[in-house]
Length: 298
Ligand SMILES: [Mg+2]
Image 1 (cartoon, rainbow, N blue to C red):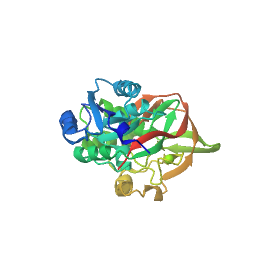
Image 2 (image 1 turned 90 degrees about the horizontal axis):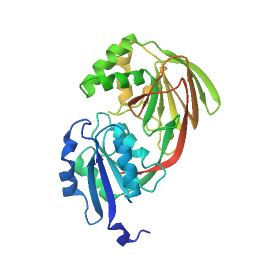
Image 3 (image 1 turned 90 degrees about the vertical axis):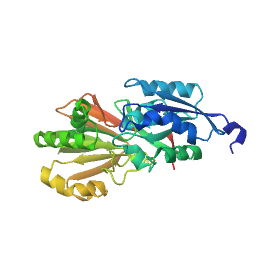
Image 4 (image 1 turned 30 degrees about the horizontal axis):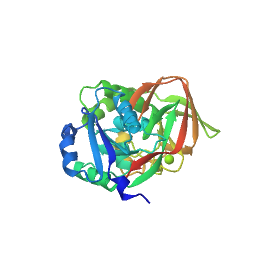
């Protein structure tokens, strides 16, 4: 049992990405001040200035004794904050303000600020898995192939949001040639030519685009999702199945679960980790870190 007195000065740090999604989060300090239970928490609101800054702030917050660190941003911000929290007693909370909010949506966290702060006030904790790709952390979905390409193009695209994402994706989709992958999943080897291969900790990329309907965050397994290329018109026709979590019922999506995944590819150097583009070797290993992160959930 927690002594109510030790509860009183629980310290909480809000890490805000000022440039994610809607931009509303710039007002967050006032909203926190109004709705956070200040008899339970003392709080700080800090803004990130560049990529990588959120993980530095999170590490420092933990060193200074924060019990909850809140990522106010999208999946990229969640990823960075998580880097500072894995394996510690501090819990991650999320106020989703990104364009996709994959992990937050999987956890059914409210997007509304007031409700999101209500969830933090209640402080219910759950342990979840995280994973690494050649040692780099991801907590939602990582991948190679077409979506890694789109993540890179999307980063260069001036306007964010679903429409920009959509137009960038469709023109790239037409031109994209599927690549060959040799994938070893806990020792079982499969060879596939694929549009993309995604490594799902949660079930979705964001915006309820479900790639791994059966993925759970606490089973110690990554869902390896191998997607074949299908004609664009067919993809459009079948896209409702992505939003209703039934795309795995089509022959285009194959899902294999495992703890350790080794991928070899002949071409391509790009990957994405929680939607943020990066480069990796042609061969890379994905490992699950079971129940390595505490999250505040509704
Ligand atoms: Mg899992």
